[in-house]
Each structure stands twice: as C-alpha cells, then as structure tokens.
Length: 493
Ligand code: SF4
Image 1: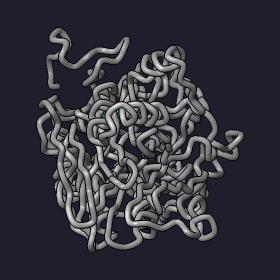
Image 2: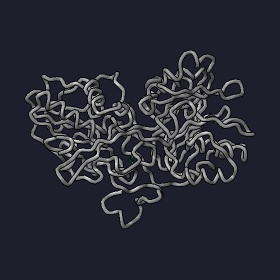
Image 3: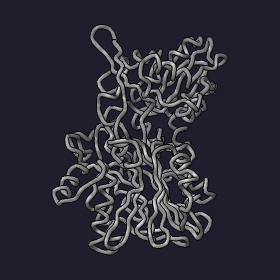
Image 4: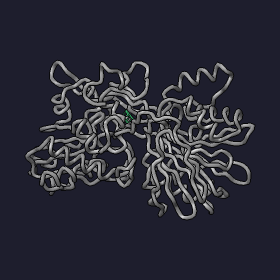
C-alpha cells in the first residue's frame, strides 16, 4: 500500500559551510501486515489474535473479511486492532475462512475509507484482498484503467489491484487464473491474502520483497506476514510462500501453484534489520539471530574501547547483545522506556518534542554515570532521536558516548512498501561520516559494512534488496538505476 510521509524538519548547522536537516520521526514505518486463515471452526478470533501479533507492521487501521452464508462480510476501521475490531462491531462476524489486515498510513486520510481488506463484486462472485507492499507501476496502471472508464474511491494501489483481480475473475471465472493474470500486470512489492468467494489464497510477488509464510494450526492452515503469529496460534511454521507462488489453503490441506518462471529475488534486508519481530523467521532466517550476528560483525569491523555496550531500546537490543558477546565488553541497559508515549513527530513545537522524548526514554543513572558507553541501534534514517538520546546520556554523566549502527548508511528511497520516499530525509545522503558523527554528538560513529550485513543475513547478496543503501533497484523505477545495469554493478548486487 502506498503511504504518506509525516515529518518536520530541523536544521543543524555544522560550522559555516554545512548544515544537516534532521527530521522528527521515530523511525521508518512499515506499511501493513496480512493474515488469512481457514480451519474447521470459526477462525475470526484467531485472525484477530494474529493481527495483534503483527500490529507493529501497521497501527492506523485494521480489518477482517470473512466468508459467511454465501457472502463476504467485512469489518474495518481506523485505530489499533483492539479498537478497530472491538467486541461490539465484531458481533456476528464468524466463519471458517477469513483474511485480515493491519495498515500504516496511506495517501489520503487515515480513516476507514483506506482501511483493508478491500472488496469487489464480480459477475462470478466476490473478492476481498489484503495487501502489504507497494505497486511500482501504479501510476501507469491507474491511468490505463481510468482511460478505460473505471473509477476509484481511493488513491490506493491496493484498490487498483483488487479491481484488476475482479476484472480477471469476471473474464475467467477461475480464481487462480484471475490472480496469476493480475500478477502479470503488477510490478513491485505485494504480499497478499485473498478471499475469492469461499477460497483463500496467499500470494507473494516474484521478487519476494515482503515476507509471507504458511503455518499449520489446529484443524487448519494460516498464511501470515510473520511466523510469530503462527507461534501465537500454537501452530507450526510449514514453509515460506516462495516468490511468485500462489498458495491456496483449506482446513485440511494446502496447494501450491508455483511461479511460472524463475526470477531474481529481492528480499528486503530491512525486515531483518528493523521491521520484523525478533521472534519471526523470514525466508529461513530467524530475525533475532540475524540481529545478533550483525552485532558480532559490528564488533569485528568497528571495535571501541568502552566500559559497556548499551542498546537503544527496543530496536538495538539484539544487535547490542551480539556486540557485547563478540567483544567481551559487558552489556548494560541504559534507558528505561515508557511504552505509553505516542510518536514524537506529531508534537507541534520543538519544546513539546523534547519533552516527549524525555517522557519516552529516561537514562538509568547508575549504569551511565562516569562510563564510556557504546550505544548500539539498528539503523539511522534521520538521526534525530539518536542525537537526543546521546545528549541524555551525557546529561546523566556519561564520560564518552560512541555509536555503532547495524545497517549501512541509508541514502536512497524505498519504492517497495516502506515510508522512506525522498532522498532529503536521509542524514547520510549528502553528508560524510564525520558530519553525521558531529550532528548527533557522538565521540565515534561506525556502521556495519554492506558485505557484513549480507554475511549476517546469510543469503547471497543477489537474493536481497539493498536499494536504500546502494542505490541499485531490483525492478525498473523511472529515474533510478536498475541493479543489473552493468556499468553500476561493481561491488555487490
Ligand atoms: Fe527494503 Fe530498502 Fe529495498 Fe525498501 S529499498 S525493500 S527498505 S531494502
């Protein structure tokens, strides 16, 4: 789903010649999570539970569609799962097969109009679809269908793909053919769960940008963005949905419709670095283990003489632990995090934002005072929160604050479902390492290298999307460089 950016700028002056523009935002936001389940009993409570487990992938709206008595019923609204799908509006929503969605901000308002699943009625029945990703040829496709006389309620690529699926369902009266024909029209990132009448499918784009996995649960099967939800349902992870596959599930079986052709893969490296839950397994790699390995490799690549290793909670925890284990330097928790404070970028002025950060994080003085600290975080996008945390540590008595980052510098936009859309929002885009170190106020700054990150994830670089750190895009994006353009392919792809 396409998304909007919410940000405000703060200029930081570096002497006479240079200036950094930092943006107030707590970190990149994901743009959705999906689930689909088919079982021999009412699956709605389980789908609701799975959505709560993947709530981190989208907090602005939630919805469930269920096949019941020959029709598809949908409940969706803005807010967290427990607000949008509350006891009152869920009454009577029950059935053996259902899909669900959690969403992060889109173009347009954040309300129910943009909530998913989306629905379309065809002459051959009903379709409800839930989408995680971004369709990169959205503009061309939308123009094509507007020219053909179609109309749209939203500015959402998810609405477009659902309607295209409806067109093919009308044409073929065959759900698998309708989905495959839709895939043939789409470029970009999409992990989908789809209800076509009483048949339930999981679909992953041919590059496999966003995760999608299949699990066996009591008397049924589930398809979901992250395997942690399968654990919560007391099920077993069966396999990842492979790039380009369509998987149909029933209560007692599943069927794979393989990708018609082998295509290069492009799994989003940021899922392991930051987005996914540490307890999820994505494409065979447990997220927590990858993050620990990132920390170990960081310790090798970027050593420091310090008294303790400290995470930025919660995102840098596994990375910091790996660094500590590899280096032998003690691990300490340096901040108490208040989980009940909202995001800082919506605060109207600088003073409010400062107050919000100090309400959200408070240093634990006994672990900080007089210490040389190595602060570890997963990534730097804008650098604002990190600079405030460093200042807090110094105010609490830290002697030195060194920073290590578990992702190479982010310099380029994402077109595949993450809200990093313009180059000017990245602190690393036009500034040197030394500029960034000075701007955030660290004594030293080190990032893991790109080959180090590839080693930590443990799959070939050619199977990963790393476009936001190397400017080489796995699909054709107007104005951007494709990773298979030979003249720009020297280090790794
Ligand atoms: Fe992930 Fe970056 Fe590629 Fe986007 S550009 S899919 S965030 S690796």
